[in-house]
Length: 362
Ligand code: SF4
Image (cartoon, rainbow, N blue to C red; front, side, top):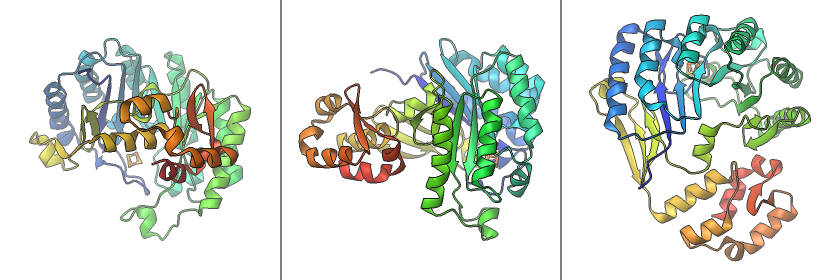
């Protein structure tokens, strides 16, 4: 059996908790971070990890660790980095200091994903982010000085005070800083977050769609490719790691709350720090049947590269071109699906109504 070629590592610590956040995260305390890293090392060693193609360290905020612990983390990961073509760290602009960038570059990290969310200081303040736009500019300049130009920026659409004109300003700011990959996510208001308690509401679907159109039209003109529902990249700058997920390929997931997919099993790690530190890493396991695998295949591949109907026929014994002939024809006529290099691909319009396409094809 081939081993997974991708590894996700979760570092759950943050210096400050943002008002909208529903990720697995904890307030950073050194006394928790030290045993966490020791446990993470053991968890990594519990898998028989072979040569990897991609490594992604996310959070939380990996850069929240103090420099000595940050270096310890890089040392723990080092044995797995040989041969990796893409090694990404998530970072927040305010905690990506020059000393951390030096360490990242020394340990071969070649991609950074920056949690920017907005370049407007009023918006950033309203969601309790620690950084301002100056920090974003400084972090990007420093990264480039140290030779890292493969930088993703995350933006959130629909934040308090945001508007179409501020979104255009964000896009102007980021593209003029030479950013080659932008991820845009719709703000979701989760119960128990500060924004929820303040009564802040999500945008209506049609308002959100307008914002996505602003992003798409702007970035399309600048030469970016919309290669996944929420992701735009200049050619050659697509995220190899994230494409692993959307290609329905296997990956290891380590750390608090991380998910993984190995063989026939999809698993989710515990979000309970106490349990994790005791070595009770996995909380849920799903053993996949062929039908489950087919469902994941359609759900994930339509987000990005599209469906290879021959592969689906050989692997899942499903002839979609016959079984879903009418649905496919109708969705092609409506401009939601098209054939590209022998794959059935969702167009931009199709990606905007992806759940409907998936339901029609399952
Ligand atoms: S930095 Fe990220 S993970 Fe941490 S609280 Fe803010 S949004 Fe959540």
